[in-house]
View 1 (tube, one colour):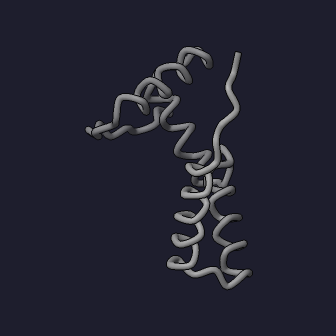
View 2: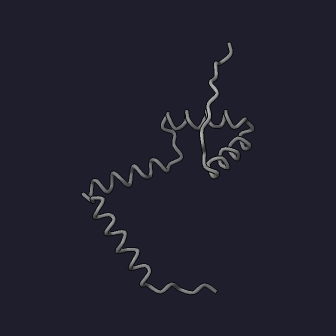
Length: 91
């Protein structure tokens, strides 16, 4: 029995299209099938790790009681410290 399909139009940024193209070529499947697989994988919780890493960072910040303002202040301080420190020259 044939699977019914719905044609849809979505706007994707250039990098996402490049990744989709590469994924489809690597798997030897059409882009629409690669996109379906990526969506089903993401829905099943089989993310690439970026979402898991972000969730882990959020949990760490919450466990430390680090508010958004405190995190922004820390980030600003670290950035200023890095800019003030001379970088070693590479040959």
